[in-house]
Length: 228
Length: 71
Image 1 (cartoon, chains in turn purple, green):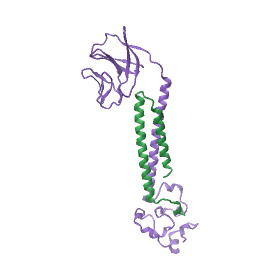
Image 2 (cartoon, chains in turn blue, orange; image 1 turned 180 degrees about the vertical axis):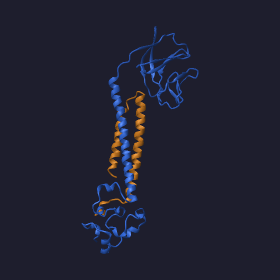
Image 3 (cartoon, helix red, strand yellow; image 1 turned 45 degrees about the vertical axis):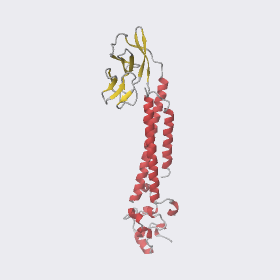
Image 4 (cartoon, one colour; image 1 turned 90 degrees about the horizontal axis):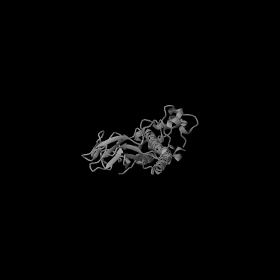
């Protein structure tokens, strides 16, 4: 069975009427409701998937549709398919962004590994400088790395980074309650261990390793950790 | 013939695309979890999972990109 659509020359609706092409009964299928209005019966080609039938504004496009028409369909069902396909592409693009993030972390790890040098000792306080429950801030290992030294009520000395592991606000010791408090978002850390015990902080405070000598207290290293 | 080229109907293709999108969403959520867990471990001084997490995330990307070929 020959239809005008299969001819080499583009045809018009008048041509089809003159050839006496019969309307395809599949046009009346309920599943084609979304295509209603986009196609006229006399332009329907029986050897074509009914779902793919569409009438382009330019009749010449029907014989040789331009490539861009795939991305800009006329019918709603096709448009929905394109929208889903574009969304899937966007999800893969998002996936690329996640991989890029992982790559950035891996690059940071390499940089950190190459820069790893043994930390130097730093005297941070005299032995009798802090009373029981007293605290003193210092910078270690860098000049911008704020840390805090606390003498607990039982006399033990502990030191931690003063930056909250949530968003790097400065934590404040509350010796009576036995906690460090982050006032920004109500984060709490255990005063003795630095463990995150409440609020949004995801990790414990990095612990500063101490060495006590006759002439004072020294910071000798810093221990970052994910669990206390 | 056009009908010979099309293996699936519109409804079937839409179902397939929906399934692919669901799978891509699961992969993206998995990658998001991997990224946050890796970042948390890295900032906590544990860098042992950085490499495996990067590889796992890359595999998820390859899976997703492979699925795009079918839609």
